[in-house]
Length: 413
Ligand SMILES: Cc1ncc(COP(=O)(O)O)c(C=O)c1O
Image 1: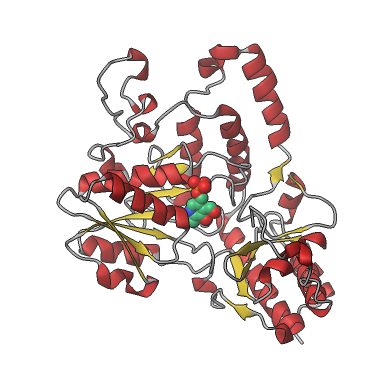
Image 2: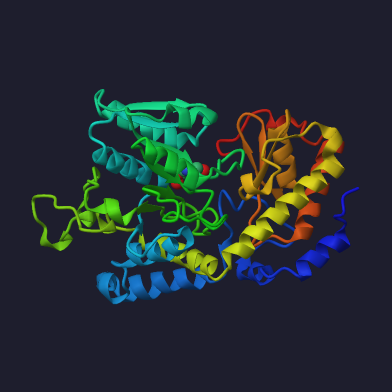
């Protein structure tokens, strides 16, 4: 038997320094939400703020709000706030576009700094958009750039003179494995290779120290652990030392040195603003800022400690209650190698996740057979781990996964 009975877990919740954060989110009573790594929960402060932006700033202020409500500086202002979560300096992060678009910008900027090299390297099984953006750049380059993906454990061996840029996700979206950012960056730099880090499952989930690791470029999502809302804008980091020479290929007017001079010729802005492209989405930006502000109130060391504890509790409870049902742990058991989600492979994982959702436990399914459970320390209680695992056991015991409604997969899994 594991030590995690209800009383022990409730005792952990009483001593939890982050317990107060849960009330700052809307969460349906009785729901165990283990998907904050796909779409973070709605912070209570976001609704009134959106109302204010729409009714006052847009409705009343109209176009004067670009200055009057400081809309024009929002990408940089929110970027500076995110920078603090990433170990970056003010002026090194800007909020813009989607993570996919920012991958394109970061990769092409890195390529512009290594004109004599031709390979973008990544690992097989990286998040698809990362691989697809590499492939798109390669196709567009007409043969100058080659996209190459090798098995994760072979990435460092493949570094060499031909490689311009290495693209890796720090916390793997499926397995939750954490890459050693400082070590990988050091090895890449030794080979003259620049690194683009995808921090989508890192920001707000684990402590990140971009400058401590000597990182070159990074990108990440605003809608996951940062709780910025569905389709929230993403962010891009460019180390200060690279900014002057890194040429934006997506040379939109918002990244121009003087957007309102309306010049015919493109001149890149001096700093991180050169990574802006078009007009920022102000409503979405306002929601993201609420999520980032809330995250910034939490002590990241406490967030990491609770995230790891939630993971340990969840895995122990799975061993105890579901050990007989054929789950294979996909994530590392060792704390140091695990991010803030825990995944299991199971042959009936798709139907299982649908049956769990009907029972008030939301996680997600990742092709081909993975159940992924996101552990968000600001919203979850330790006792929720037991609720979730008991529901998983119930789905297994009753074979509730075996339902014709789930014979065909939905468009979003
Ligand atoms: C590692 C990683 N990169 C990128 C994305 C998504 O990028 P976008 O916001 O452009 O859809 C995700 C989404 O889950 C992700 O997990």
